Amino acid sequence: MISSEPVRNWANGILREALSRKADREWCLAALGGAERLTWFRQAFPGYEDIFPHTLIASFLGVTPVTMSRLRANDKTRL
Image (tube, rainbow, N blue to C red):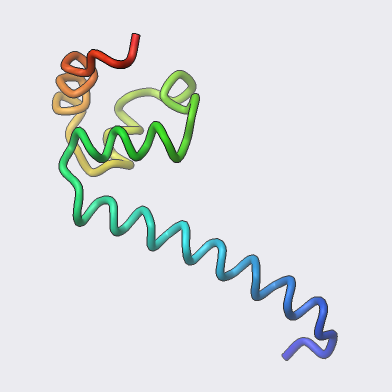
């Protein structure tokens, strides 16, 4: 499709990276519980918890805002 091999390789690399990130998130949502999802989110996106509203993070993680609040309240490692 693209005649330039370096450009094609560059574009394929970007597509593979995006697909890998999406698959990682889908695996997280399917396999992990709420506390593990929050831990994954913190490791994958450090600092985002301080930037975005917790309701958006809860939606991203597939939990309710109430569950998100409870998970954060029970988390003794985050101060």
